[in-house]
Image (tube, rainbow, N blue to C red; front, side):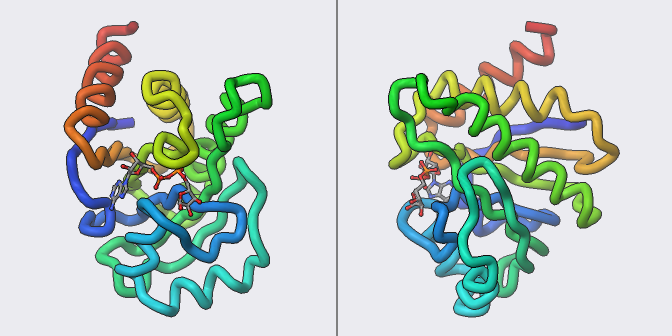
Length: 170
Ligand code: AR6
């Protein structure tokens, strides 16, 4: 598994699938979710409506519609409540369920935003450790490459530092 980090707007990435840090309605919101729904167009909203929502930690897949990405994998991350409400396991599930859907749908390249590190307030370093650790341990045949898409220099720096640590064997 190749892992990289970039500083970019995830809606611009020409990959097989981008992951959306959604909420349980799957019907859009602010942050990266709002950006993805705006860029993908009305058909994404209509496709998401059919799911009737999604539990935290689970994932659903749709086409990318007007996006350059082929698919969008929607996963509601946990809201941070201090760490005592299973947040780490739920966040890990977001990554695992997204990777499983990517594999089932033949996706070779997948880009993840920082799930839960925005309005859901998951501490950045702890969330990044789970993101990189879970992807690094994935033993499926696909995806072949995962791109961690940061939206600020600060977040990019934490991804790069964490990736380096994993490459060096921690
Ligand atoms: N490309 C890449 N990353 C982005 C983009 C973008 N275009 N826009 C924001 N980010 P958040 P959450 C980063 O709050 O914490 C929504 O309203 C952002 O800087 O989008 O999982 C949903 O509907 C941050 O680092 O997601 C939910 O209600 C990261 O993406 C709720 O927010 C995640 O921030 C989910 O909260």
